[in-house]
Structure formats: structure tokens, C-alpha cells
Length: 97
Image 1 (cartoon, rainbow, N blue to C red):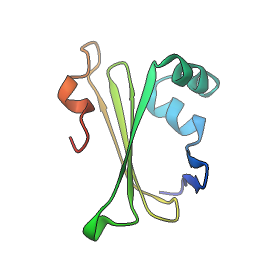
Image 2: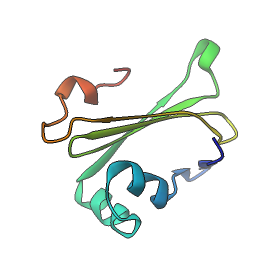
Image 3: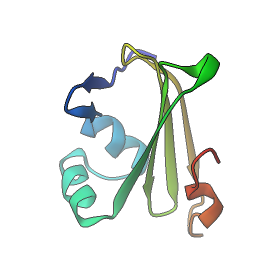
Image 4: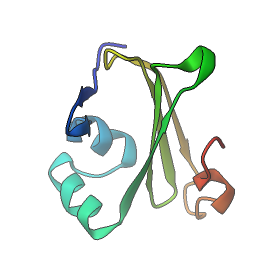
């Protein structure tokens, strides 16, 4: 898919342009919205046959962006759910959903 996620000792870093485009906000607003809690995230680490992979999920308004990332930071899969004018159902915010 081309894009990569930076994985280091300090944590995981995702390009604001990638998040902004998917979540419908300007890239320069991403960090502010994260600090304010308007964009939230969830990190899940793979186990068993998925060991070494991570699932990064980002939430903003009615949108959920999910990225499956390999150990080298390569985005292996990307999905976006947008409920439009309706709020994101609480079940969509649970790990593994």
C-alpha cells in the first residue's frame, strides 16, 4: 500500500496527512484534535499467528479508521467506516470489533 508507520522505542507514529485524509480533517489539526480527545486511538498487538502485527484504530466523530501494520511498519490492510450523520455505534469502539 506504500505508506509506512514508524515503530520505535518511544511508541508508534502515524503521518498526520494519512489520518487527516481518512478522518476528514486537515493534517495540521490532527495533533490538536488528539490532545483535545476529539480523535482517539486504540493499539492492539497480535498474538499467535498474528504475532509481530499491530492493529491501530482511530476514531473521530462518525468515522473509524483501522490499520493492520506489519512488524516493519508496512500498512498491510486499511479500512474506513463512516456512519455519516449518525454517531459511531459504541460496539465499534471495542477492541477486536
